[in-house]
Image (cartoon, rainbow, N blue to C red; front, top):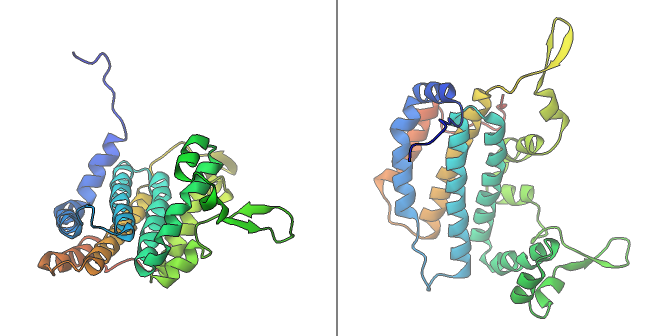
Amino acid sequence: MTPKYKVEFGEPKEREKFIVEHERFFERIGSLVKALNIAAIKVNANLSNAEVVIDTLCKLCVENFNEILLLSANGFGNGAITLLRSMFEKLVTARYLELHPNEVDKFFDYHAVKLHKLRQDNALKEFDPDGSILNQFKVVRKKGGRKRLQSSWTNNDLVKMAEEVGLGEFVKWAYHVPLEFAHPSVTAIVSFLEETDGQLTIKENEPRPQLAEDALMLAQAFLLEILRLQVAHYKVKDNPLFQQCIDDYAYIWGKERRSSDESLK
């Protein structure tokens, strides 16, 4: 059946421009895709809980990368940089649990708190029949009185975890800055204002290609970190393709990776 309407999603002109301006990216990104497939583990009954959680987080990072690429190619910089934080959080958590596999059960058990907050009573009863899992996350309030539920599965915040796993330099641009675009903020509002002839006006929705490009560059750097994690943790046999991916990054972006002192525009 022939569709009644012709619908075009995204920004065709931005995509065409993106493809032309990022020829090196499309020329070389295939090697990273192949390397990730080589380093990925096959889920089976013999894997530990830590391995299942870590590998799944790695796969979710790849999914985030594909989403960031889609938004970046259409010039949607705000959306791309917002998703970058999601990808960064997964990467940091995967690296942290790789260093502390004894905390994987706690990470998994915190699902009880999420079910409680979502008021998914039936699912919570199935997951935690006697309430013992939920109770382990109840802590006394600072001023005493009733207990409250922990706001996270760990006492370490993400910034501390990022610093511990060697990703602290990315906190500013992959964690704090994206938050400004994900939540209502003055930063987000100001980014849509401009002064014309002495009058302050709100910009029309317009592409943010530079912000989109910066998000994509960092997202590819995080994929390299995922590759390093998988190769080291699962003791994957060395492959020339792994080094090729690092060389490709420098070829694509003209640098090994972004400096933490450089600003996103």
